[in-house]
Image (cartoon, rainbow, N blue to C red; front, side, top):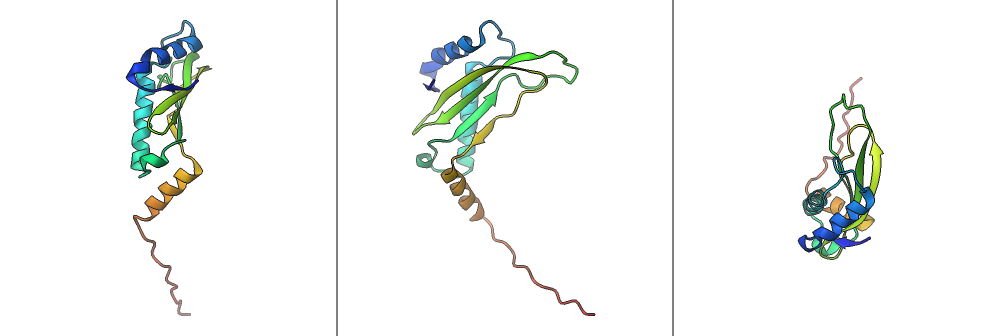
Length: 139
């Protein structure tokens, strides 16, 4: 599966979710949640100072369902989904149905090694490290 995340493809994304879930709808993913993940991950890439031309290949994962009260004792059906950054847009690449107890996992961005190196270089350029000064101890 590789569906561009845009308003024109909302029906395709919805169909992919329904194909995985069947009847359950309560805690499962919806199109706006996947679109929100794409926006959040794009913002993270921007915050890491990774240029648009270097963003291709980044992936992210998300999970529907959010948090439930600690007293919630039943399992529930959720969705996990993965998106990938293309040359100019994000694409939905996978949707799975899972059954869990408790809270959903938080969204996570995954960089390529080259993107990691760019982010680290940009970050370390913003500060310097003090030199260690040896202190003579008088006996």
